[in-house]
Image (tube, rainbow, N blue to C red):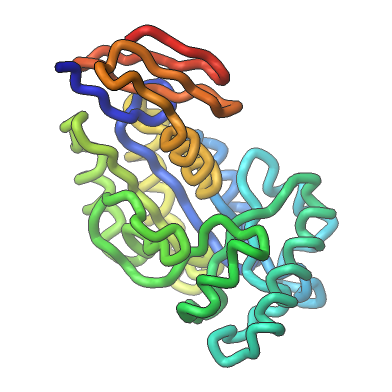
Length: 265
């Protein structure tokens, strides 16, 4: 009997993703750093707070965040668990509409403002076009999310970042899928005068052949495509009905199954 495993793109078994909130001017430096080391980030933004001089102007979003993901953080950053659901829906949709107009693509992610959410809000989000939502806190591990609407990161960048990064780099058991997810606010580096923390981390984890560097939504979209794969009962072939390729490991051999094709395994 064949052993078939889902892989990340390129047959990789590790993914790194970053998530940063509020769109403060320090994002200029953070995006530049990510680009330098080939790291992908998701930036959770409030389109209704353009009046704040410490935030990046809306008119610059498309250029600044090119190659990364822009996601919702609600329109004006309220503590949404205290809000009527009608207001939660309005906050998310107004943010989506404004960000989509600025970026030119669908915005389908969310970071809960102030870490505030509820079960009712989680149930509401799919109808608003949101495919995942990040909470605050630290998991201290590299597990894939079981609930995309309660997606907790591996760590905040001020919590064991280098230690966990070294553990992540050293992971080698290819029978598992590992995810390292780092979150925070770029202005915290200025507040603490510790930009070296992120620079050292990026040097450690960037540019590695066994890591997939992805935004939050890229992980969600890819895992959904992997979940739609159709396999023969005896493992002899697989059909990929999705619009993107999916990689699998068949008895330790990496196989790419292109979009809309059937491949012998």
